[in-house]
Image (cartoon, rainbow, N blue to C red):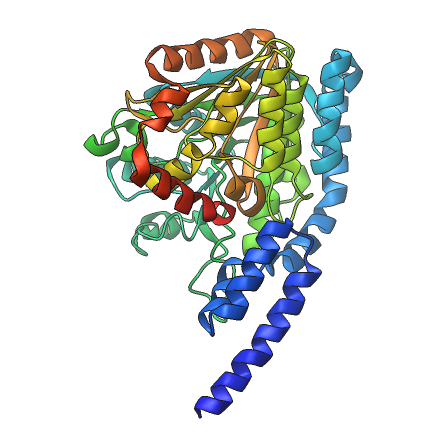
Length: 474
């Protein structure tokens, strides 16, 4: 029996090795998996199947092909609604940036939008509640985390009210992010006619070997005309009501106009992927209103999208800067290309400011991020650790001209493994508003110098080094 098990192990290891060699990943990541799989019997290949495989690509690629035509139709529809607005209305350098998103993620910028940015949790929840109450036809919500607490139950009950009023409600949740949610939590909504679906549910058998591929998006679409997106989940934690991580700082935005239709398209693709049911264009994609003068580019990214789309857009943001880049993120484990962009910008004389939390709900990620401090500080990057609460905002502002805001962290998990949603907004006034918010974070943060970084001692250096080894899956 033992002999048979060992032979089976060697056969599976050989097949897994062939699979790894066929993948075009970073050499270091490939080498790490090869060493682990070949030196850890059974544990190695089982771990790879759970955390290294991307079998979701096969099914998701079919979804991508089926939605490609829908994306083209959306772009034409948006251009008609904006009375012929085209990308040529942007300055030349921003047209080049927008072209990156258009090429790598089929994400075209559209004008005619009104954007509100929220940097306070209560502002976000108040605006979201008002929009849900005003919904007339449908509400589509997609979240990574929805907690069973006062906030979670209040928004669930609000959705139930709207269903009773004749509004269609669909909720799409990630099965890992919401693993603590009781199975009966949504029963009252379902009994009234609402719909709830789970993204890559773990309880389906056979196991799809995609535990690590999660839907990290946070979005709500109201009547196909108004959308919310950003970094804030639904729960007391995200209102700063938990003492351990209070106060909590997030960044969210509301967009009214053609770009809301693009967020709707993202939800429609995810809903069809999770349920197999499509959303008819004529019913859920009304002609978007001309609501303002903001140019917005909605960038959906994930393991089935173009490779490194988010990394390329982040690289474009930093390399486009001529004066100042502000970056706030709770989890910082940057890919090599982004690290090079940050150090290169600093060497060019661009003021690069990076704001990270002093404490985190994921300490290993915090330690991994600190392992990059020496390299960045040597290049002239300014690093600040924010200790006045839990900094969960994901923001990048470029030269007070344009910004990125969304669900994606500045880490390899968000860049390669998670389904994320980022808005790129080309508007100086809104950018300055966010820049002021980051400046406020900086004013309440501790500047990190090389001397401060060295004070972490041997234990700190070992913890950072060990966490850095785990960076490919953090």
